[in-house]
Image 1: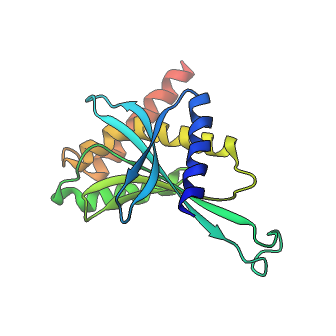
Image 2: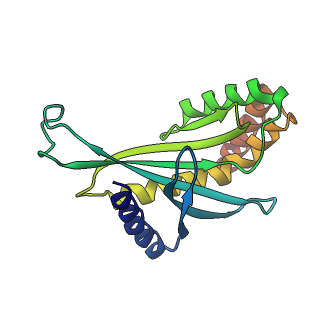
Length: 187
């Protein structure tokens, strides 16, 4: 299974290179040694690297569970994790948690979570797909969304994580930006 997962990551890496994404396969030790495809998403406004980690786990699907599954068909679980490059202050934990909950309700691909142990914000998306038919376009669009989320939500999330702003104040700030944007379009 381990070699099979590595082969899937190698194929995915080739697709991403063709799509002009900078990526490499590395071994990670969490919670056990496994290959991981690291995608470089550029630097944020403070020149910190933004990364997306993709891991794969093969999953045999029982045909009795799914009428669409062929006997012995293999499925994979692709996990895409994009940790934000800053820490959440202890006093800001509840404000960040509230905002992430609100944010997940507003976006089409929810997946933001707060790791209380590591004190970081991560965007996670998990995709189950047949190993015979990897949905290349879907994977690329999800990665594009994750890169967009890192760019657009990184600065306000960092302000919130550092305690510079509260959940309510951040919502008011966002509301003001939307009001300005819609007012400018009418003029």
